[in-house]
Image (cartoon, rainbow, N blue to C red):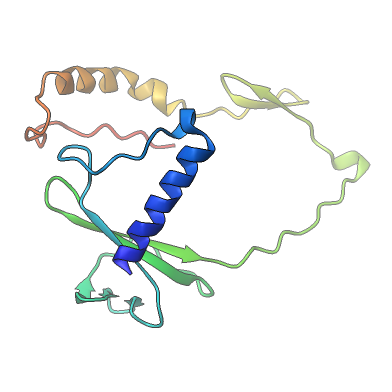
Length: 172
């Protein structure tokens, strides 16, 4: 299935290019510096599965020990797994699930309970009573540190060891 997924990705890249050439650009081959070693496999039968004991079953590899970052709700169906390797040699598995559409209750507008919201550039929104969202402004708080790290990164050579650089994380 890994070759099938590569073929589907190639077909999608060419279809996107011919539909809108200026936006997507011509599909290019993988390169030494721009690719990330990865492979994708799709579910057929029971060849992919997540075990309760912290293991992921993959074709050709068998049981692989994993660290799960969140619980999988009941009713979600496994679709595919992409295993990728970072430049530091760590392996990551991205798991794609299909989940049922949530039941959204219908909202009835009662005359006294309707609230109007206006877009506000600094605070995201403001309602009719003057209440504001009070966004955390995480990007603005981390902007100085981000600029410093980008200056350090600009002095590094492409493909060099970047372990000494700290990672700037912006949480929303």
